[in-house]
Each structure stands twice: as structure tokens, then as C-alpha cells.
Image 1 (cartoon, rainbow, N blue to C red):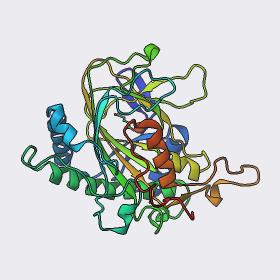
Image 2 (cartoon, protein in one colour; image 1 turned 90 degrees about the vertical axis):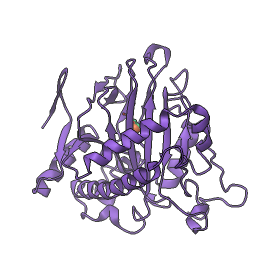
Image 3 (cartoon, rainbow, N blue to C red; image 1 turned 180 degrees about the vertical axis):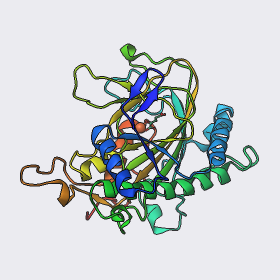
Length: 338
Ligand SMILES: O=C(O)CCC(=O)C(=O)O
Ligand SMILES: [Fe+2]
């Protein structure tokens, strides 16, 4: 089913998680993944009141004075506040950073847990409960719910790739997933492509899949063929109560390019906007290489194998001005021996 947006028919599938026909649903997921790498997800089971509360709490945080927000500036584990223009998602064409501020919340790993030695792993940061009571609890609850939903979606993706349903659940793949909730707030700055000013510069997401919730302000656009000249950008209108699912680079690599990690960006039209992506990325040490079922003599692997952690760290290094990539560099190389 295509979805009718304000300006006509949008070629995005709408996947109903409550459909009893799993095989048919997986076939439609496959079609969406092959053609655009994006689809809407409805009847996903996340409590709408919880999602509303996350938006309310997100706005409360971004409404705080900068001085208060800077108390939780993103740390060595890439958790916490990222100020306006700190991220530059398309450095080759942007004249300045994205006109958005953000907040990263990951899986909480205590400092004394051996996993805390790895880059991107550690405790979260939260604004003081005296300033924002209940904030941490809301975010923690939402993070847990979304991990469950991402696992369900990953099962559909496995079926869509003709793999066993539990493929992505296997130990070593997403049993210790890097699952990251990100709150985003776009300013009123109007994007101007000609001058290199963007809400979010063009990029594809990095991991397995992203579940994006947005308010009702439009702005997200996708480009299905990044090599077309000129590139064609299509609006993805907000859909109340639905998630927008998009696939990450790692799924594209696993599937040898069959499932698409599609270029997208945010063009701001002068209205503040809030969105909440949730990135579901494989375990730090997960090795991502072409699935045997996705290559053959006539269709050899197109990508070099890599680890999930290596890919994420490289991407964050390229796009975040304040990213501290050498958390453990002084005493060990996290990629050694892989
Ligand atoms: O804000 C949005 O709608 C998209 C954000 C996005 O693409 C991202 O954070 O990866
Ligand atoms: Fe994205």
C-alpha cells in the first residue's frame, strides 16, 4: 500500500505489525527494503501515552538554559547533549553544522562492567531530577520498549531476507546491541541547499535499523538513487502514531546491497521541529559481512567486512566535532585481534 501525502502518492509501504499473516507482511517488508529502504510501521504496540511523554520531556530538556544543558554535554561514551551545529552529517557540502541540537541515551553499562572498556559503552548521563523530575524514568522506559520493538522488526527483516526468523537475535549479533535513543530539536533556521545549510545533512544511517518518531512538522526527505544526476528528493510526510523505519549500512552490507540504506536529510522550513530516532545497531564486536545467501559467483560481495563498532566509531568521528574517539587509545586498541 502506498501512502497518500499532502502532495500526492508516496511510494512508501505501510507495514501493519498486527497483521496475522507474517509471510505476507515479510514479503511487503522485502519489497519496501529493496525499493526504498524506508517504510511506515503501524500497530507497533508502543504505548502512545509513553511516546507523547517522551516528546514532552524532550521539549522540557531543550527549553532549559544552555548553561544547564551544557552540564550534560556528551561525554567520552557519546552520551548526553550535543549542541546546535555540533554534528555535520554531510561535511562535503555543508557550510555549517546541522541546525539541530540533540541528546544521546544508550544502553546503560556500569563503569565496573568489562564492557565499559569499549568505545561507546558506559553509563548514561541525565539532567538532574531536581531540574527535570521523572525525565530519566521516562527515557529509560521508552528505551526498553523500543529495544523490544526493534527485535520484533529485526525478525521481520530476517524473514524478508529468507533467513530464519531469529537470525539477528543470535548471540554475537544483537544480544548486546548498541541501542541508542536520540532526542532531536531543530531550530527555526530555514535550510538553504544552495548555501549548504541543512536541518540534517544527507546521510544514511549506520547500523541495522532505525525507528524514527517525529512530531507533525514535515522536513524529512529521501533520495532513492544517490547516483542520479540531479538527485531527486521526495518528502516523507509525518504520520501520526506511526514509526518511520529505515535500514542502516550494516544491513545493506549483510544483504550485499539488496536491502537499501537510503540517503535522507532534513530540510527545515522555518518551523521548530522535534524528532526521536532510535538506532538499533549490532553488538560492538559483531562482524558484518555478506550473507552467503546474498552472494554468488555472478554476484560477488560488494563490501569489505567490518565490525559494527569500527563502523560506528568511524562514522561518529567523521560527523561529530566533539566526539572523543580515543577513549581507551592510551592503553589498548579496541579493534586488536579481530
Ligand atoms: O529528524 C529526522 O526526521 C531524521 C533524523 C535522522 O535522520 C537521524 O538522526 O539519523
Ligand atoms: Fe538518519
